Image (cartoon, helix red, strand yellow):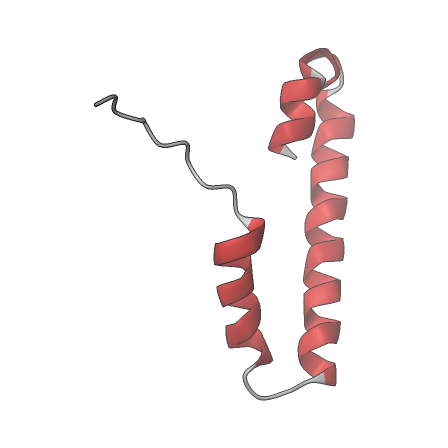
Length: 68
């Protein structure tokens, strides 16, 4: 969502109701998909998804590169 907001800031500013509805729909869908995955592979799947999110889904903060 942050990338879309960055790419289309005018939409965010001009359509707050639509942005709120879109954000909620994405959250709901994400939750539904995650529940379905965990239900199909009970056990450690929830733990795996948390690990996967941390390493592959969440955006890393840029690092400052120090010159030599």
